[in-house]
Image 1: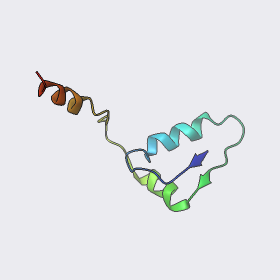
Image 2: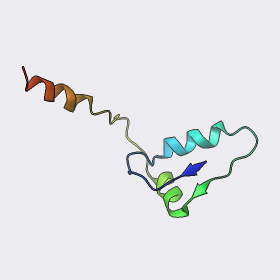
Image 3: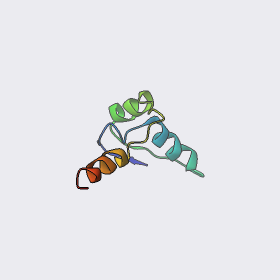
Image 4: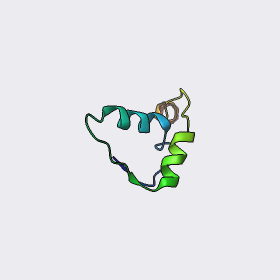
Amino acid sequence: MVIPRASNLLLTRNLLYTGITRAKKLLIIIGDEAVVNFMIDNVDSKKRNTGLQYKLTENEDYK
């Protein structure tokens, strides 16, 4: 599993958990230990950051 430095919104505990639990026989994590530790501590909220609300609001301005 490659874990690059990325936006904090992407480096979540849930993403790390998904990668770990999908491994069948072996898991090798490639990345900075500090980034992995950040992911462990970064519990994402239930809120999804899709930007949908912004897009809907932006479209209302054009009406």
